[in-house]
Length: 306
Image (cartoon, rainbow, N blue to C red; front, side):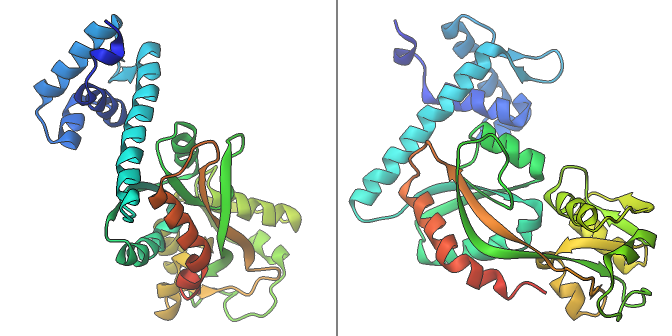
């Protein structure tokens, strides 16, 4: 009997949950069932396939056979979700669950956008996750999100890119920093400052490094702190100068705990993009969210930039 006639959706969901969570215990929590139930579903699935699907020697990782089945299982579940959405759309209802992935800097405004969109589309729900640039690239490559919000798209992927808002970035420091209050600070002045950096590979870090290279600035002292919040706290404590998105420090500017340094050729202007897979027909809910971000996103988050 063919595999399609024997495999159940419960078994496929169990395997995907273990692959995503990395353990039977966490997978059981995700699906609100017991751990033995998850183990039984995966074991039965392995028996049907005739191959081991999970390698448990170092945690739980998919075997090559497991990777094939999980990839196709995601497509099956996606197709069923799409069918449900289309059936409701036939009745004139935009509905379904949209998986939204956001780059870490975007977490400061994405909930506001989803709240505004959700108010007009009560039958659409969201699963929002936040990742660094490497994590976003993995999600998109493995097709584990319907829609991504970030700056520059990862290379080598077939994505539809829709710009929806400006993204300014600037240098900030504590109000008593020697550069605070100075006008038209030359970029060369940063060479003598202690810079506070995001992790290697982050979009913010990449934009900072391009700015420094463009102006021939070689920094002598720098600390890698790894998150926007940590950078802000370090800058407020007088540890050094941070380069951050305007979307991240508006509250601190208003409270007088940070100041934006008037460095020449800043703010560095980039753009926010919404990304969807170009070779996959988006659901009506996803397409509605893309259009909402394209037309309303810039207006809604424009006031959040310092």
